[in-house]
Image (cartoon, rainbow, N blue to C red; front, side, top):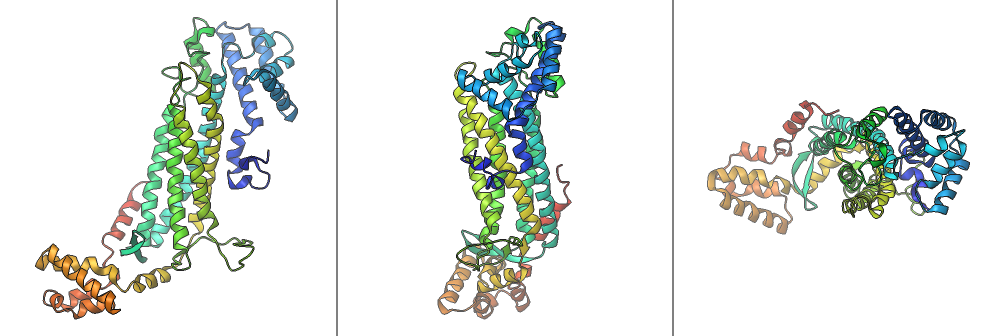
Length: 453
């Protein structure tokens, strides 16, 4: 369906990775649903809920069933005729049963039982893909931190040069954030990997007196934890998933936006690697656009929008509310695929980003040395107090700008400063490499810590 960007034959690759898209495609999803329902029939037979011969018929039918375009069309026709999410699937499988399986297939379960159990399994697989790329991004950050722990550049606040920092320090901030996200994935796993088999209102009423043991056995067979309570109306697990991916993709957006800004012609301190056949513009041949960095922002917006939809699902009517949980069928695959693409792009971007250390040095110098004002003020404050030191240095900065002079020039000539600071101390204060504070130490401290895996 080319009307949906994620499924576009041309543009689909911009919105998802092939591995992530496979998790949510109709054919693998339907196959997994059928596999789950076959396991359910076996477990129900073990507990005397359905006849053993019916369970065997269902197992054989499901194992041999070919889920292809024709089968999907059959399920679609049944859905359109009944307006029920799984009635078409039930009828299609029942028609293929050889004996009594047709009477007992999908017995005692409701749509959310199979849909939620499948989705939790799909999200577990998605989590592995996401954390693989997250770890790639972390490894790339670690390499940049080591390589550029002492690479001096302007530190900027409010879009203006503030104080000297190192590029390794900037990347260390990215790395620390990515590491926290990696821990969040592990913390969320215990809450996420929980199955659903609760029936129409969550009471397991159709599964007999041994229902809880049946539920436990079924979820053991599919590899998920037993819920402490039926969660047909409690959608906080999925809302948390959406918020987690919103956090992760926002970090990717932050990093991408920083590279986007530092690639501006007027700054030119970073550049994303150019594709061998990359085209920046079909009208302006000279352009080398930060396409990946920019697209991270697009993907992050898609994730945030869909994560907000999942918050709406937290407000449920009674024991089940289709208005809420059916939104998940669109929002969760879309935000998961977009986040997966974002982390894949982020890892590749960080692995190949080009760093122009010389341009960083030139840009810092082009500021006229005003980024060194804090060090001068702090040294002077030890002699005359902070308020007066701030007044003196601020006045000198204003005078230097008005006269078109550099900050080091006015400082080195000012009598007030020279009366309190010696030549050697002034020279040290006006050396950018001596004014990066604890940037290198902070990088080293972070790198010495064990990264989560």
